[in-house]
Length: 164
Image 1 (cartoon, rainbow, N blue to C red):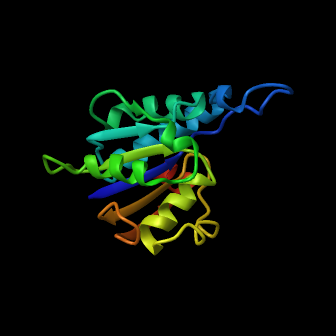
Image 2: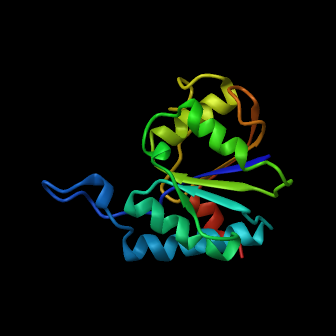
């Protein structure tokens, strides 16, 4: 399976006493991420399934993937915490029963880096060197088990925004 791990678009700062989960994507972040989506389309990618954190900034980012995805994003609180076996099982469901083109996950750091590290290296300790900027994309391919995927690309948002 092809899995695209996407960090949410640029969001507002957390207000004093505010809830981190309520932070929204800024208007600038939305504009920039729409250009990231155009870059993904220029590369020919389309997502059969989008899994998203329920936090406001990730949920909105997942909605912005609509031009390159099917259906409504599926929210899961599993993307608001360190990767667990339940998340790997949910990802695995993306590849069956039908063969799918690609699945996208939209979430937050440091958990996305830990997830990619787990999928590629078999543990979560190698995720820190994977610099995933806001609006950035990591493409991995293989089976959704620890160490079962290969890192195909780390695509910074600036690069994707330049594609047409």
